[in-house]
Image (cartoon, rainbow, N blue to C red; front, side):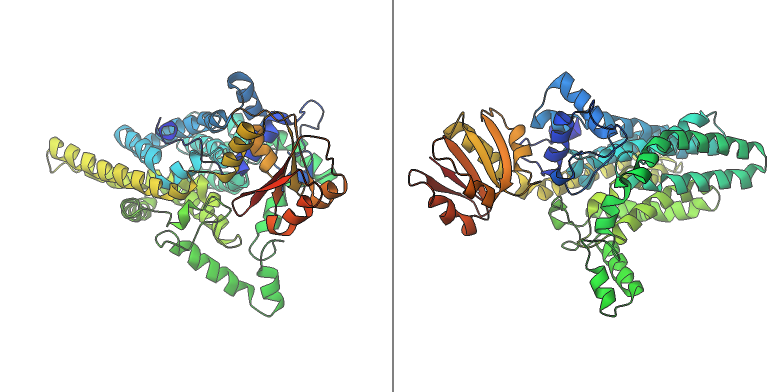
Length: 481
C-alpha cells in the first residue's frame, strides 16, 4: 500500500515503458523462448531473458495495458520480497523485529523511489531473497526442499543481473554447511541443488552459447575497466593503472552512501542524493556493527553482510556515474541490518516493556517521516514527464493522424505513446530523419515528432508550406499540417 500510495502516473523513466511495451507486443509464440527480449536488438540497447516479460504480459491480459498497470505489475514481486523478508528476519532475529524490518523496507526511501516506477530490477530481488531464505533455512537445519533451492538459484539468472551473485552465495553456504556438520550427506544435497540449478539454466545457456550470449550484454557495456560505454579502456591505454581506477570508483561508491551529488546514473538517479537518509544511515551503521559482532558466533550474519557487499561491488565495478539500480538487490537485506538496533531495544530487559515500546515507536516514527520526505525530495523534478505531456498534446490537438517519429531505431518515444491515455493515432512509426525527408507525403494529415529540432526543423518546414513547426521543449518539436 505504501508503494501504491506514492504512485504518480506522470512519473515514468522510459525504461519501464520500454520493458512494458515489449511485454505487451512481443509475439512469444513465434520466438525462441530461451532467446533474449526484445527479439529485435535495434529496439533496445540490451536484451534480457523472457520470464519477466511473459509474467508482465499475463498481468496486462488480466488488468489491461496502462501506465498504472505497468507499475502495478511489480506488486507481486514486492509482495514476495515483503513476505520473504518477514520470514528471513524471523529466522535471524525473531517475530517482533521481523514486522519492524518489513516496515523499514516499506518506507526505505531509495527502495520507494525505484519500486514506484515499473522497472525490471525488483524482479531479481524477489527471486534472490526467496532463494536466500530457503538456503538459510537449509543452513539452519530446517527442513527445506533442495530442488526448489536449485530452481530458484537458476532463476536468479533469468531476470536482471543484480542477482547473478546467487551461485557463489550458494556454493559458500554449502561449504559452510559441510564444515559445520562434516557429513557426506551435504555433498549429496549439494549435487541435488546443483542439478536442479543446471536443469533450469541449461536451455538458456545452450541458446546463449550457440546463438547469442545476451546474459553478458549489459556487463559488456557498463564494466568499469572493459565496458564499451566506459572510459576505463581509454584511461588504461593512456597509462593509468587499473587498480587506481577501481580504487577511485570504490571510494566514490562508499561516499555516495552518505554524500549527495556523487551517485545516481541511468536516468533514475534519485535526484543524486546519497543512498541513505540520515536516520537510515544511523540505523545501518549501528546494524553493521552488530552484524560484525554477531558473525563471530553465527556465520549466517556474515552471509547477510556478504549480500550487501557483493551488491556494493556491482556498483563499484561498473562505470560512473554510480548507478544505484545495481544496488537494488541489497535493499531488503539492508533493512534486516537496520532492524537490529530495534531488536537490541526490544531485548533490553532492564527497562519496562512500556518504555521499550515507546522508544521503538519513536525510532520508527522518525525513520518513516524522514524517509518519506527524502523520497518526495528525490521525485520532485520527475513529476511531469515531457514524453507524457507530448502524447497528451498530440492526442488532444491532432487526433486520428499518422505519427512519424524522426529519430533513430530504438528511440523510446513510440513505446511511451503506446501506453498514453486516449491514444488515437492511426499508426506510429520511427525512422531516421533522412528517411522521412526523402519520403515526405504532403497529401496525408501528418504529425512528425522531431528530435534534434535545431538541426532539422528548417529541413522539414521547407517540404510543405502548409505545415508548421511547434516547439515542444528542448528535446522535441512537432511538424504538423
